[in-house]
Length: 330
Ligand code: SF4
Image (cartoon, rainbow, N blue to C red):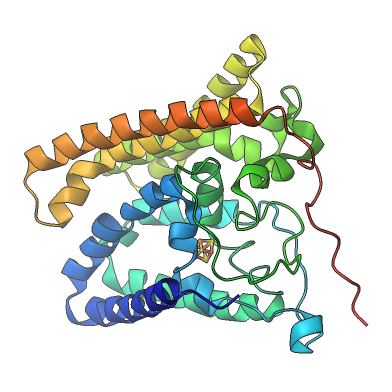
């Protein structure tokens, strides 16, 4: 399968945009920093709800972090199949904490962060087959893509992997948005034990983490207070979710879309006015768009629950990789 021209063009555009952002951070530090953190970053979560491949097909870090096709195709034997796991969660938490502690107003640090991500993507990406080294393992955005992208609104095909090479044995979003999350939760997804899995714990804590971020940054707290607020917000969120799940015996397939909707609804409710201001819009537009987005998230939640209910009858294959294990290296 050849890459479709629209996605190839999209990849060139996002790589050029990343380079332009780097130059902008040097020449117009204040405007570029605001545009990146408040103008561009808030666009991404909504694309994950529509379909994670909308972003994943063109993400510049994914482009730079693509490893080789595997030994059968490339002849290389040093690239490895690596577990998707939950390795992206600590970098995400660290990044959000750093952002709240001043990163979003500091052009040099923002530039260093982006440069560091490019280096990690290239170096780690080369260690794995295709997406296994960085995109499906270390990227700090991956846990969010998985949580918000578990029940897309439309169908969009992955454009980077012509055939599955088994680079990511469990939880590959590009292979199947429907099975990625249950594969990550594993056998513990039955009953309430999914709350104690790394991804389940992340999903349960994430709504409180987001609200705590805006509470702490709104009060211009210092770094220690910010971290404490994030920890308390996450703990309250996880405990609240655990109480509801134990009390109602809510399954992961209902609870996770609900937690995703709470997280992204809180995010857009609290961030949209400032995001609109970053694009030069007046405050009333920001408030109006926030309402529209929260209503849109509620619509996605209804769609997700309906779709999950409809797919319960076909659970076959959720617990294991849907493709044969990769051939051993010779
Ligand atoms: S996981 Fe990271 S590298 Fe991969 S598509 Fe998403 S943002 Fe890009």
